[in-house]
Length: 263
Ligand SMILES: Nc1ncnc2c1ncn2[C@@H]1O[C@H](COP(=O)(O)OP(=O)(O)O)[C@@H](O)[C@H]1O
Ligand SMILES: CC(=O)N[C@@H](CCC(=O)OP(=O)(O)O)C(=O)O
Image 1 (tube, rainbow, N blue to C red):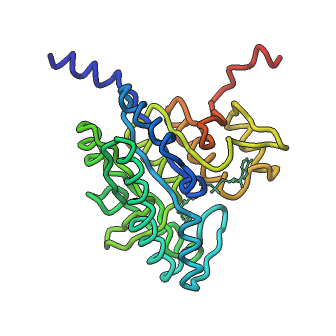
Image 2 (cartoon, rainbow, N blue to C red):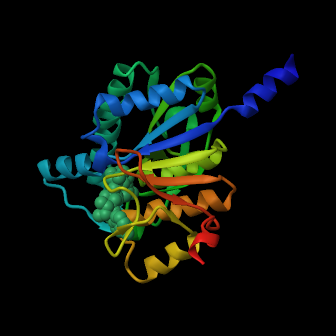
């Protein structure tokens, strides 16, 4: 019996999906119903999200300055309060509502819950209240997944003193994918994948990505996505995709399977 059960478990696919703030507000019921179908077909889902545009609006409304450096928001003491309340208080429950409306049992979480995301200051002098992930406690995620519940994780970490730290949503997604040993990572954003000189790429390798960053073809918010993708591939997660809201986009692979046709 035990063998049977564990074999069943290892056969299940586990997928981490990150919904970017750039696309979050335009997603409809049909989009979320795709996730319901995935879950019904036996895929274990963990959803993470960002919320850059919502944070920008709230910062502007309160007259708090912030700017990005290498795709990371430089986050002052005033700004972290707004990041925390916007992501955990507004963006996360809105997303949980959309998922539950699509028939998915979903529960909202953030880095504070059962030490889910323990973080250190990345570099306080340069970035302010931005976190670098120190550890991900997967215990709670496993409990929820086993009960058929989809965890929905806001990208706020907590340091050992209980200070909230802002972490890029793509970074949280890849760290969680690594921690739960996901079979795939899907980053949903506002573009249909990586675009190079006006052409969307269907399949790319880490070495091409490094070249494109160097040449400035990949910049800004795309940088934490490809970095997270490469970290996952390096750790053996077989599939990472960056897609638009139609779920079409770029697959990042360690080596191209197109070598014959492209020769
Ligand atoms: N090579 C590239 N291909 C596609 N998008 C890119 C590229 N380089 C930079 N970008 C930018 O990255 C953005 C997506 O990142 P971001 O705005 O942070 O989205 P999200 O909120 O989904 O994390 C795109 O809208 C585009 O402006
Ligand atoms: C440190 C850092 O940059 N945090 C991000 C967190 C939100 C996020 O990542 O949102 P997107 O998914 O929309 O990019 C920020 O403050 O914007």
